[in-house]
Length: 177
Image (tube, rainbow, N blue to C red; front, side, top):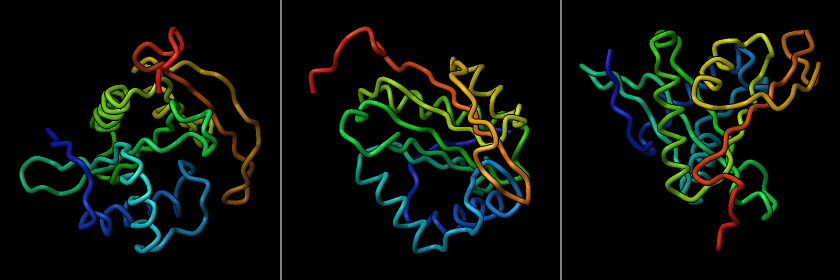
C-alpha cells in the first residue's frame, strides 16, 4: 500500500484526535490517561505549526483515508534546547505493520534537518515496544537510556526508552542562529 505524506491541516484534527484517543485508551505509546478533546488537539497542532515545526499526516492511496500522523515538537521549552526536537508518531491501528511508521519518521527526520535542527529525541513508552524501538534504530537512532518504572498506566509500572539521532551536522559545529 502506498501513502501520501502531507502537512496536517485543521480539518484533519478530528481524525487525528480519534487515532490518538485510541492510543491513549489502549496502549502505552502515550502516558496520557484521558484523551484530549478536539479543541485541545487543535491547540497542540497550532503550537507545533506556529513554531514552524513539521506536523504531517499520511493518506492511504485510493481514497485519502488518514492512516496516521507524526510531528516533531520542541524537546524542551528552554532556549538552549532550540536545536533539538522530539518525534511523535501515531497510526490508525488498521494501518500498523505496513511500514508507515518508518515513512513518517523519515519525513520528520528530513523536515527537521531542513529546518536546521541538530538532534531528534525519541521518548518511547514501554521498553517492550520493540516495533517502535526497531523503527527508530533502523533510521539511525541510538539507545541513550531507559527510565525504569517511571509511569503507572493500566495498573502497572511502565518504562520509558530514550533514543537519539543526530540531524545534519549534529554536534560537529555550532549553529549561527
